[in-house]
Length: 199
Image 1 (tube, one colour):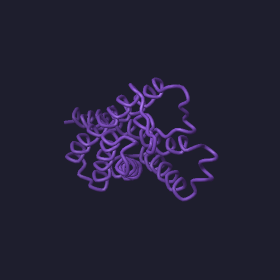
Image 2 (cartoon, one colour; image 1 turned 120 degrees about the vertical axis):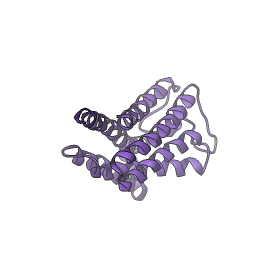
Image 3 (tube, rainbow, N blue to C red; image 1 turned 45 degrees about the vertical axis):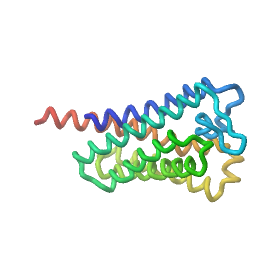
Image 4 (cartoon, helix red, strand yellow; image 1 turned 45 degrees about the horizontal axis):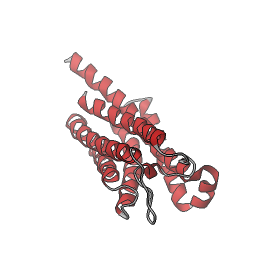
């Protein structure tokens, strides 16, 4: 039950933390023009950060990453599926990196963000090894959406940016992963609780 609880709260605090940091950010912030990580600090040169948005964003990323690492350790004791555990562990490491290295810390922030997006998408897809229908299909779908949008953004960014903006692109990568994370958290809480009561 602990792994499910931690996965659920990791996804929830990231989503609610982003909303809270956006609410405190000065006027002019746009989900079309601004990357999510601008909440922590904008890119160099002429990087800026605003409090309390910066502290909120960086802290929730760090906390969520730690939660995912701990959850991944405990779920591996139960399922023993390295195909899922490895990307889950890397997902946690990536989020911790995003929290430690804000947008102005190049190239480390970019490396951490890329690790987060890629491992998060693969994590959702490979969770098919530990879940059942219909959540198996939902996990593969959400992970595939995140990776597909990331791939299109990298190799056809001009077209996609003009359509939905850099902020929209990043959210279409990040939010499916976070929604899946809360979903698998609920799934695991139910699965693990049922198995405890069956014993």
